[in-house]
Image: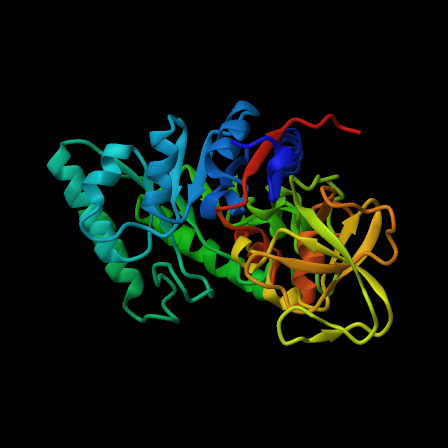
Length: 391
């Protein structure tokens, strides 16, 4: 990898901050609840392998990805522990998955039966988690009889027939855990509790029960589900990387002191004094209203710096907030350096990560989400892994 002095832009990933976030979330979950660390989408753009290794060194034993390909990357890198494939398995990939030692989240009876057939062919029990639909209506088994009059019976019959499986977990997914007053999460919990009760009556007693994502864990904690059920696992994703969706209609939960893990920087490749009345960039969508000092950053939408930040984004140069001017292009971005006369070619601008330039603030400008901002940082942006001391 190039020396940072020669990088056009770079993402700096603080593994010490990541481990600190893991410890704080573990404390929030409390005794008896394990963390299932979500590292899908290349660990939300942070780098799945280095992030997973750092989490494992902090005590993580369970990881979640979206696809079997993502699971294979972790296994091929030598990662131990359990790896849950949240998106389940495509038909025909069961033996590959079994060879990797991963656990699929089962969302259909067909997936359940194919996984059981693979277990029978291999002569051993294979683990999986049941993903139950409680109102998200995307993936998930339709266990609730109000949604499918025959769903309960079909699932219970299939489970009874699939006797080569180790049902390690039962899970559901909240639609909007950060909304604290509309009752949707409470209704999902009631459905989930009923489903767990039916499973227990049928003799299915998963070790892990999980639903809580980052927002649920931070704002709601880990509570009971009624009928003696309790979350024994939580699935933080965004919070591991230092962000939590703000609560809606209620007060924030615990202040865990989470630290932003990633900072994104781009180099100033040149500066220019531009007279009044000159257009900047394509279009041009910005015409200088006065003489301005303009800086050219070596980052663009091909790197994941959203085109929607044109004329509204801000970066930080030597502690000064500098506005994006004109349309962001594929590889380059113009910013106003009028308030930062000391800035020179070779300096770096902070695009993301340092206060107040976080993923949530950037998401507000592009009418997107923090997830999108982080996941869209492109593969051609080098990741540098550091250990910054706590301050």
